[in-house]
Each structure stands twice: as structure tokens, then as C-alpha cells.
Image 1 (tube, rainbow, N blue to C red):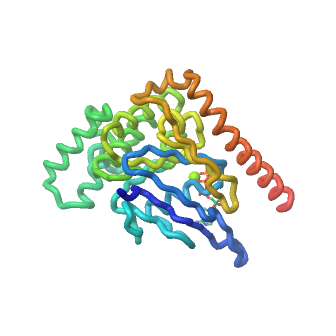
Image 2 (cartoon, protein in one colour):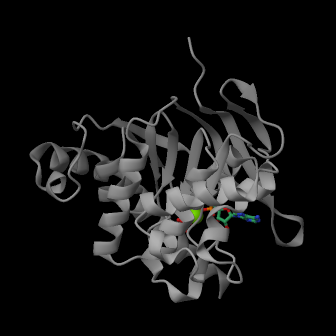
Image 3 (tube, helix red, strand yellow):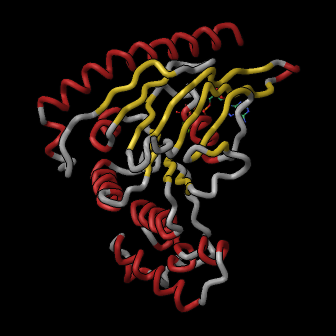
Length: 273
Ligand SMILES: Nc1ncnc2c1ncn2[C@@H]1O[C@H](COP(=O)(O)OP(=O)(O)OP(=O)(O)O)[C@@H](O)[C@H]1O
Ligand SMILES: [Mg+2]
């Protein structure tokens, strides 16, 4: 059997809190992402989505449990993955082209011309070939995300870890970016682990949606395969009856966790004052 691209095996993440206390962000989470799959992680704010993604990226070691990447225990940074975060990750003093080719200069001492050609090819793929010599501040938010996407894909990762990459974008730009990510992913055999607050986005893009419980000690409370055919039309798909069915059943789980997280936040506010 081929090993999963990403396996979290009974992972727990504890953080040091104020006054020597300890906070358990996630507890005993086991999940697998098969090679080539597109899997989304949803759950209320603070439930540990970013924490799990950081563990898969090797940016955070689990307090308990094991992370495996293609079957091998992960120690240190996950070299087979790239990460795309919600925040801007472009270097403001570098041009669009230099931002896109950043990982090439870091990873291998390629010929400059070769990396430039590859950079231009990727800029073309994300529709920004004419912006190669601009600086990030001269682009719109959506364009900057496309640069970040090219920057991630050019490195040729086997795994893409994405933490709410499009949440700051307006709905139209977002739909476009979602379409672009699916186009890049389709047929690539790359594995995507995608974190989002938006259940519609999760269903529209994914092969499977994983629901996490409210923190502290977030756990996995549901796994939902998404059996909608591909390729998907991201605008029309939301109107399909099967989409609505999936949305309803996942939302039943998620709603409960979101309500719990509100109750906990209320409780903490009352006891903090
Ligand atoms: N380095 C850290 N030190 C202390 N606590 C942390 C640290 N990182 C995360 N936490 C806590 O762990 C919990 C989970 O955080 P995490 O960022 O994973 O949540 P999330 O599900 O990504 O939330 P959001 O949807 O708001 O991004 C939160 O309560 C957070 O305060
Ligand atoms: Mg987060």
C-alpha cells in the first residue's frame, strides 16, 4: 500500500500559557491525506487548524504523536511541502519575477537565465506575465495572491499546505483564485491540505472535508468525502442539489462546534473581568 502524503498520528499540541499554565490546542488528532488528494480542514476559530498545518509543515513539532510524510517520520522542516499563508508573504523590495523565483535561488544554484525563464512561465500560468518587473505594492490583493501561488508551485512541491489563502479577498477574486488553484492542481498528482473558515469553499474544492471540534483540545469530529464530479464549475456547483445535501450534513457538525466556541469565548470573557 502506498503511504499517505501526510499522516498525523494521534498528535497533540500543547503550548505554554501564562504563569506556568499549559494550553492544549489539539489533542489526539489522527488524519491522513492520500497522495494527489485535495483535503480541507474546517472548524471554529481557535480550534487548531493552523496548528495542525504547522505540524504538517514541520514548523511545529507535536507534543505527543507522530507526523509522517510519505511514510517517513518528519523531523524538522517538511522539504516536500510549500506553505501559503493568509498574510502577505512577498518581499516588498523584490520584483514580482524575483519573488516568484525566490525558492529556486534558495534551493539550487541554478543558472539565473534558467530560473528566470521558469519564473516567466509560471507568471504566464497565473496570468501575470506582463507584471514581472513590478513590485508587490503595485499589484492588487488578488494579483499578489497569484504571485504567491506561482512562488509556491514553482518550487515543485509534492504537497501544498494552504492556510486560508483567499480569505482576505473579495468574493469575485476569490472565486477566480479557487478556479486557478483547481486548474493547477488537476492532473498534477500534488497533495493539497487546505484550511478555510468557509464551508462552501471547502466543499467546492475538495475531495474530502475534515471537521475539527472547538478548542481547547480540538479533535477531529467528522470526515466527509465530497463525491461531486470533476472538473467542477465553481459557480454552478454551489447550486447543485448534491452540494446542498453535503453542505447541510457537514454544517450540522460544524454548527455545533461553532456554537460551543462562542459559548467558551463568552465564558472566558465573563471570568476574565
Ligand atoms: N505559539 C503558540 N503559543 C501559545 N498558544 C498558541 C500558539 N499557537 C496557537 N496557540 C493557541 O492554540 C489554539 C489554536 O490556534 P490555531 O492558530 O491553530 O487556531 P485556528 O483554528 O487556526 O484559528 P483561526 O481560525 O482563528 O485561524 C488557539 O487557542 C491559540 O491561541
Ligand atoms: Mg488559523
